Image (cartoon, rainbow, N blue to C red):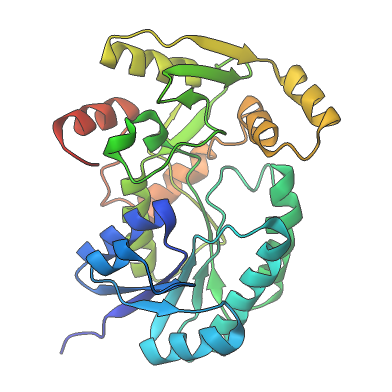
Length: 306
């Protein structure tokens, strides 16, 4: 007799969420549903993903989770900072009250949150209070999934779901780089596709750790930019901002979120801890063939879309 299929609910599909949805759709024993504020979500419709509209109140979420028999809730929501805690606390409450949905991955998707729990500052204000709430309850199993940078930021825009970010040192459109620190600080990056596959494996896993890391590759921005430059046979004009200069900027403008993330890069906060990440790779992700940057660039050249 076949086991019942697990239903994974995605809150706020977004760019990275599209890779997760695609991999969930490809999995043989998992189904996916999308929670959105609007029924007009063409990408989900085109991929035949059931859409459930919600205003992210408990009254709205509970019937959806129960009627769909969702077993896991994954959030890609990135609301205004003052709303993050309340929205995610409601998602957690909906899981607690749900008959079946007893697993939750909140919206984190950053770097080494154990060594640097208060970086960036806007995470200290939003994620850290919610992490404490998660630890205070035992009704719902949860994990904070962190991949470092998205490796897709190195790709031509037409090749990936991931849109450009002002926080990333390489501007793919202007083909210039502004690197925080010396460029020799260790970083992690993970492809969107690898993250999607990692989420699938986590959904199948029997138990979770409270913090999970995934990384396609550890490297530095200097090495990565050299790889990209050599691959495309074109120069990438590169400037550098020292850690002290970035911190001076933050002293003058403490709410500058781009500077906060650039400080993280200069401090190495976005490098997933090597030993733990490799241990978890063996534990959870041994079936995944992770793509480093060189392999990703070649793959993107060979296919229409990664």
